[in-house]
Image (cartoon, rainbow, N blue to C red; front, side):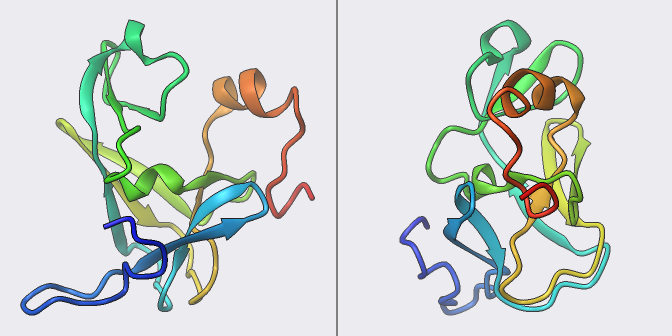
Length: 136
């Protein structure tokens, strides 16, 4: 699934992917392959469920007050979604699953971005400077 540039190749009986992983201004990023209207489900953030205490320094998304998903596995393409101060997507938790949905219209070739939230921003992004499209 993570062969760069090959995510868009459909297999018989499977839907065509809506994204591709490629270089962005902040490293690797997730980019739309086709125009995505607002309120389109893009991808599921997958990973092993871990305790909140074990979540430091990992590719994580919190499920609730006590658990998070550790999305470090390369099979989790959603881990390549970068932070933006003006995001075009949002993460929604339903039970033990996290889905990424477009909030705005995303054009083909545009990077899919999320707001990582104030705690993450203050701890990890602000000290080195934000490199999102708005801030650069």
